[in-house]
Image (cartoon, rainbow, N blue to C red):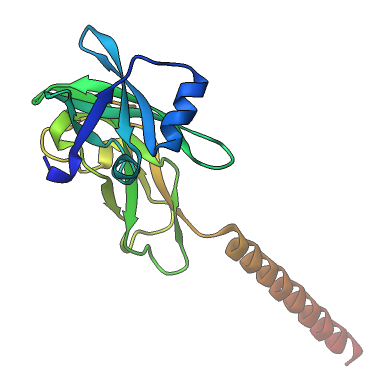
Length: 210
């Protein structure tokens, strides 16, 4: 694990919205740690450091709680809907070598065939993976893919040791021609048909007059 993931956590015995506001005013984030049959631990975390760490999906923190090390996976982050201030974090206790279920973001790379676009139908994919080897994202190449190509969860190249946990038939990416392009092509086809019909009618009139 990276040294950057080492976080010093302070146990707290005071609860309630008022105390949580005071913690946030001090630059700290209230959090609860649970899992593995242990009683929940209520702690406070250094706000700036943890705010940077949780920018990564499924962040794993190596906590130091009063001298006791604890691995914890970030499971939920509650934010103020207006100010986007982190109000609370839920952490799940994990052990090295243990597999956990996580939703890993999909990252699209490359360009599909000219005139098409790659529509991301599923932003994440559910995996079972070792807690200390959670991928930051899964890259999916759409380079040169033609209209009508579908990529499902079963088509994804998973990292070593990872197992697909969700529906293998779930659609992840669909390559298609944009609707606006299709509409424009249909309009052009209609105009061409109208012009051809007019030319045919004009030719018929000329033949009739001869």
